[in-house]
Amino acid sequence: MEIRTKRTILYILALIFVAVNAVIFFRNSGREREQLMNTPAPQVTQAPSGAVSAAVNGASEAGEYVVIAENGYLNLYSSQASAAPEKSERFDTELFPADDVKILLEGVRFNDIDEAYEFMENFIS
Image (cartoon, rainbow, N blue to C red; front, side, top):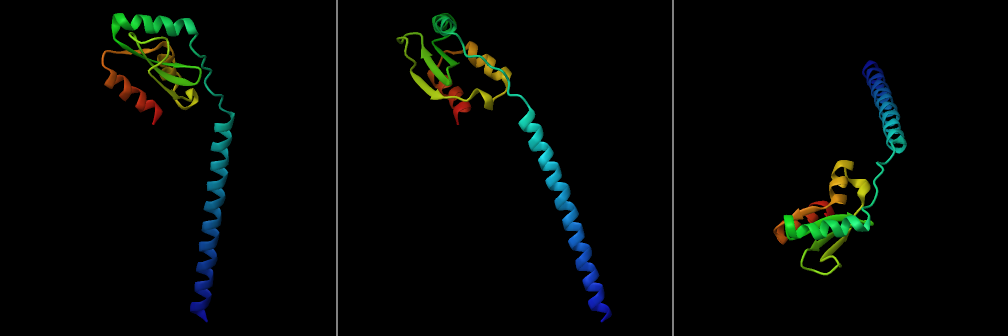
């Protein structure tokens, strides 16, 4: 009978330990979720269309290709192409740090198309 009583006490203590840890875990995860929900998203504006044409026109000076974020897309322009982008992929600015998004809104220039594609894939995938 004594061993059975010790085992029962051990089970009760283990159950209390697990319950206390569960309460602590769920309380902390609720606070983290609340903090995430109350954190404002960074305010990012889209590049004006004039900035896009300036970036693409400037590509012939600094490089042949420009990757730029505009209207929810990450676009690859060539200085030798028409006004349409060579490649365009859906892009969510809220997923990236505001500093990175600001750089993309201004446009990033490349001399090599493979480097430009690789750069885009780093943001898209």
